[in-house]
Image 1: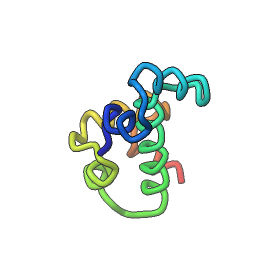
Image 2: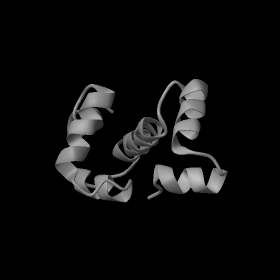
Image 3: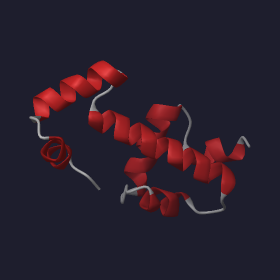
Length: 87
């Protein structure tokens, strides 16, 4: 897990400067981007493994499987189990 503060310290800039440059480049905040990347990794895992949803959630750095399911549904549009079943 990497915080925005750690990223900014590494890059040598302020949080606001880093966030603004990142948003300009990607259209998302650094936190939104990180969450989308984690959810994309979860999508791959749901389609290529038999891991349980809570195992996938934990492996991508989201310790609360209920939060993971809500976030997954918000970003992808369907719950993780439904996404897995569509393969």
